[in-house]
Image (cartoon, helix red, strand yellow):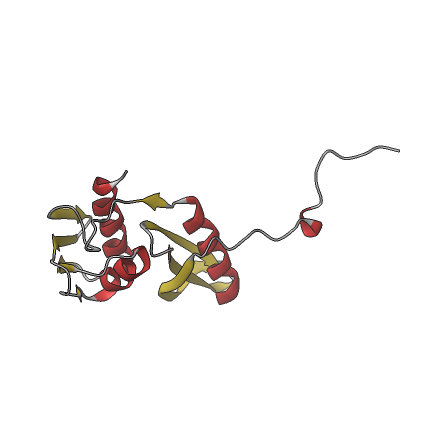
Length: 159
């Protein structure tokens, strides 16, 4: 009898959740034109964080929403970065980041200020565990570009 070296993935024990929280940042119906007509798919952008300085984003498409969310969450887990957060739950210094057409400004804020940010920046700062920050989105209000710009800004604060 020949035994396969592959393990049966269906019988594998489930992985621990690692206390990550995930949030759907963007959900869009996208189509492509083929010979037979338009083909509909769903594109999902997922943010993942543990409120302790770890964050990641993932973008994926799927035939239905649940498949796209699952795929985007897997990709977000692969793209996780660890950032440095100060004692008063803020960022270490000012940063300005440009990604494609979006420009974001991040400023540290003293304790008790709260999240003064809008759009996906507010959601992602909450996921990473930042409680005191002042942020401004300039340029594009595209959620995907703004979230990528924020990840690029956070990568300056890596451990």
